[in-house]
Length: 340
Image 1 (spheres, rainbow, N blue to C red):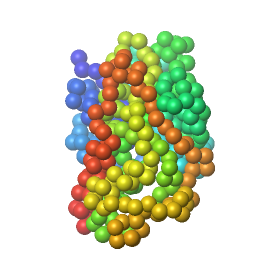
Image 2 (image 1 turned 30 degrees about the horizontal axis):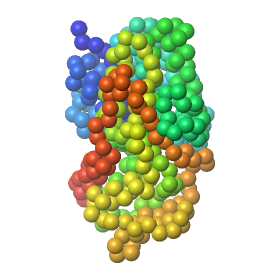
Image 3 (image 1 turned 90 degrees about the vertical axis):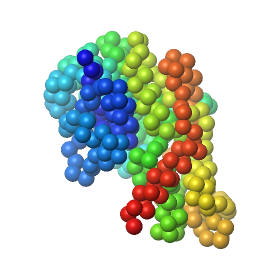
Image 4 (image 1 turned 180 degrees about the vertical axis):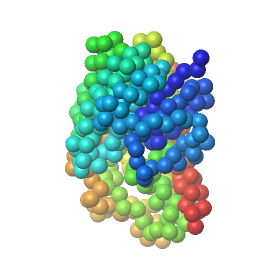
């Protein structure tokens, strides 16, 4: 009999790629999302699986709703990808972020424990939990030191998942995923803002991109690789937590360079901090910096050590950063071209 998987946050980037992976493996996929009128299934549609996913409305703030869904399906596997996932917004909406990303996970675990205790449970943890890093690179044993309401809420969710595993012998695990991007990334995230902006510049539709901290360093991988790691974690006989990362770190500035290189536009940098600009060969400013895009508390350096996942899960990333940037830029260029 085919397995049933329930994925919260089904309409997000990771939800779409994970759905595709599981459907290809023969799973029945139940996708949940909050009842919203402003979000459609474009990511699932882009992957050609919109009609292969069964949908349920479920909100991590509504206990009764979660209890009903868990009792109805009693899935083999639960992947909790639902979250307020934008770090910048978490400073503007700290209470909502903590309720959804922190307490919402506890409520979901209670729903699983009460109505579907045999389900295997995956929690989407994040490298933002490391925050102002205490070790380089960051592994499963690195202390957490979050620098945003998002990171703080995710630390609670991470530890409550571990607590349920140890207290109730539930098959729970967390994936501490470093930044992972794709053509399905939302435009509010800096990587997609860059590739989409460069595509518009190439097509003559805008003059420049305005960004924040150009010196921030991130460990960027491809979301399609990372959802494979999620699935592998739930296939283990003994549940544990794993870091998924590329082990390479890149500045925002270098990501910008790579995107403009895809467009055939070399960029030269001048100035520092908020006065930094990137100019093309005609000396036109194509990138500038604004303080409004700086976080109140910045995370300067994230680089992961995924040697445990490589050893125990046989997982490693396949798509290089250069290939990822090209993939995202080409997708945005084609999409913007068709809109004209």
